Length: 209
Image (tube, rainbow, N blue to C red):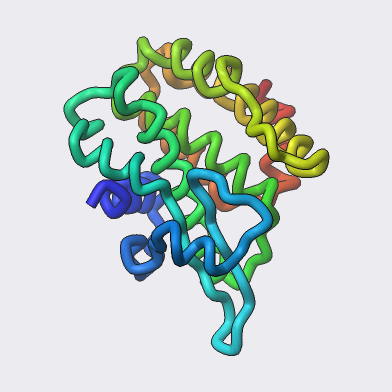
């Protein structure tokens, strides 16, 4: 239920329609392990080409989902549920974006997925709480974190680039839209941003920073 609710929220935010339900693509830990990915993080989008096109599955840690069922984020975000909430947002963000790109027959890179996921976490947290909380969310998301120890050099570099660019974009959004309470204008920009190529997104961030 939580993942489906997040999917509806992101699709409304970006005015996209995947035409599928994320719950139908969620797999549990044994199913994920049977695929034998190189890494086994708490959230993972698995994508493979098959005879019918592209096969997609989403794994989100079952303990995290159970915690969110007990501590509903719609009742408030705190130390007891915020980490699991961010995990779920990232997973659903990756899922929705991958489906949208696949339906548009547009290739998508891992860096593009990570960048959009970081932006989605910031925006979702601000919209779920308040504009006044924006600086706190920027610190939590882009400064108060640690890299997973099993990342290889390429993965660490990808996450670093995504984090740095999302941090710069969040700071720009806060300055131009969140602090002056110009939310409708922010949503309009976010919808344009969502549809840009990775190169265009990075250029926009550099210009707006």
